[in-house]
Length: 448
Ligand code: CP
Image (cartoon, rainbow, N blue to C red; front, side, top):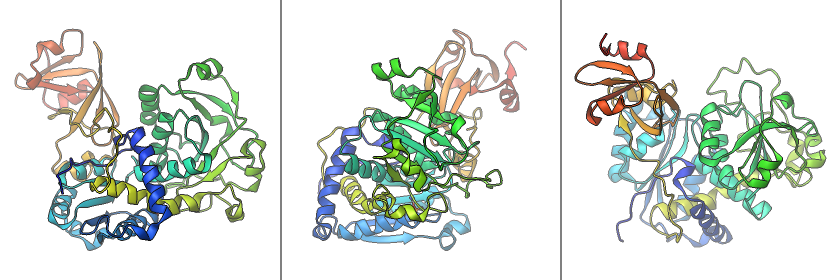
C-alpha cells in the first residue's frame, strides 16, 4: 500500500467542512451494511488509550475497528499501565504508536494532551477527549445525527444547555456549528458559561457575535434565562436583525443540546439546581420540531419520560457513533480516499519556543501538568500589534497577551512599543506577559 501522509484528529478544525460532509456519506454506506466491511481494515490494529472513564467513545471505536476487520488493543485503566509507574504520555505513545498499533485513540484528563500524543506518535492519533478542551469525534456524531434528522446543517437554530465551561463536547460542537452558520443560543448554568477563549475564537475565526436572547417560552429549564447569550453568524441579514445585546425572541429551535455537570473537573459545590429537561420543555411552541440531544452519559438532566419522544435522539447519537467512527478510521488509515481538500490552516503547526519567558495560563494544560518534565512550551502568534502581541498555547489553545519583550543573551526586557521587536534578533526574542514574569525569569528592565 502507498505511504499516506499522517493525519490526526485533535480538534474538529483538523477536518475541512467538505471532508466532514464526505465522511457522512461514507458513514451512511457503512451503516447500511454494517457486516459488509470486514476486509477493509484487515491487518490494521487500533490502540485505545483511555486514561479517563468511557463507555461510548472507547467501545464504539473498538466496535468500529472490529467491524472493519482490524484488531484492537486497549489500555482502559491507567492504573494498569506503566503510567502508574511514572511513564510520560510522550513515551507511551512513542511505544504503542511505534510497532504495536497503526492508529491511536486517546482520552486523557489534561487539556492539550491529544496534541502531545499527535506530535510524538508515528501513527494517526484521534482525540477521544482531552480535559475540557475538545472531543471532536463526539461532534462528528452530533453533526451526523443532526444532518440525518434535519437533512441539512446550514443555518440551524441550536440551544446549548448546562455546563458549557467544562464540556469539551460543547466546545468542539460550537466551532463546527459556527462553520455551518448555525445560530447558537447558550443557556449555561450560572457560573458555567462558555469560556472566554471559546467565545474569542468564535468571534475571531467565524465572526460570530454575542447578543442577549429571550428563551422564556422554554419551560422546564431551570435557572439561567437571564444569562442567555445569543450568538449569531455573520450573515448580512442576520447582522441587520440581531445587533449586539439586542434581545431577540427565539421562535424556532432545531436542536436542544443538554450536557451534564462535568463533576470530574470541578467540585460541583456551586451547583444547587441544575437544569432538567422535561416534557414541558418540548411542549414549548418553539421546540415543536426540535431534536433533543445529549452526548451521554445522562445523570439527571433529562427526564426518562422523554426517552420515548420521537424528538429525543441521544441514543441515536450514540448508535451512529459506530459507522461515523468506521468512516473516520478507514480514512485516516488510507483505506478510503476523500475527494475533498483538507483545511487550509494547519492547527498542528508549531509556534515559537517561549524559552524561560511564557507559561500557559491554563492550569489544566498539559504543559503545566505532566509536560513540565519534558515539553518545550510552544505558543503561536495570532495577532501582532504595535504594543501587544496575542498568542495562544499550541497545545490547549488558550490566549496570552504579550506586553514585554526580552533579549535572551543580553538579559534585558522592555515594554512592547513600535519598533522594539525589530531591535531584537528573532533567535534572541523572549516574550513576557508582565514585568513581574520578566523579573522572575532573571531579566532587568532595559537601561534600568
Ligand atoms: N459521549 C461520551 O464521550 O461518552 P463516554 O464518556 O461514555 O465515552
